[in-house]
Image 1 (tube, rainbow, N blue to C red):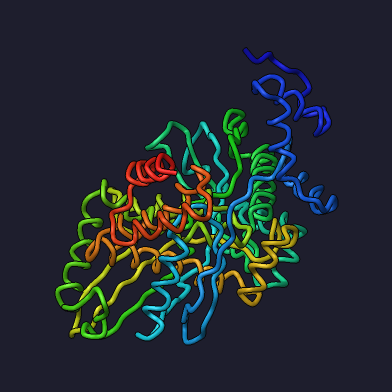
Image 2 (image 1 turned 135 degrees about the horizontal axis):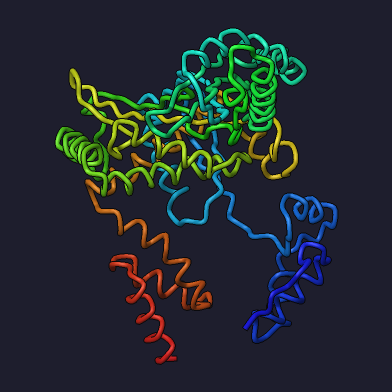
Length: 440
């Protein structure tokens, strides 16, 4: 049983690894070898990776792929995708090629507002608080001038500050609710710095506000933090074409396909159990590009799923319709992204990915990410409503099974030939591998 360890963070990297190997592994030397096998031979690059987080022991690799042929707003792009799930990059590429001959993707940034809040407790008269806020509001701006100066030069800054009464939800609970424009930066540090100054100003000004009682002067700031829910930082991506143009190898009756496709979307709009999986497919595309470009996919996930629930029930992020014999498929999602700051200037592959996208602005990156999500969703729904999802997915997954069982090249040729016209399942592949090896 592992022992408690004090001062782990103060150990050297080698000491950390040796302790972990000794405490948790029956073969410590093998465990150490696995970790070191994933170290970068370039010491400078490895040091850079080591300093991204605390207590680093190795690198955890995720494949970086590329989906080409994305025609977006009239221009072809290749989109980088960092993801471990088989078939995602292939599906996105297939969608990109499909729509490249049908007008391509259209993407529009609707808004780019981001939000931060100072959460505080005020035990007193709400009208007096409102009067106090109105009187000191300009000081929130003036006291943050040193923080906002550079952002304002780039066209960003604080857009608005509101006092919100939340006492119906929690006794004595109020907020300073602020909106920001952070241009090409995701802006987390900028927003949080502004919010902490707002909190300081709030408390200091309350102490000298003569209309407050002593209890009212004692405002308790609980926390000052940005929100990852950004319902006013929205991008729209869509595809459309005449119904008859949907025809292809697996779509012999385009009208029937379009109607079935729309019904599949409508089910995800009204049925949360389906909506979660439906939206997960969208996030396959979104997360892969967000990760490849050094952005925070956890924040993006949380914000998008909150947006999917904004009407009181979890629902589909994408929608489809037929109007005047035109098929249209679209989504609108909140995306707070950055192309400067954070890992964007540190991680070599993030810089590579952004350069592949021709060093986009934050708004342009929002469009790429939304398009990737829509493409992924289209590919999944096309498969679900035609051939079924498992056929293509399991054939892509076949490589993982072959690697798991360390199939040699001769075995791989025979196995791929056998499953060219057979249903691929994990058990079927394992059984065939065992049969091959018994007959050698």
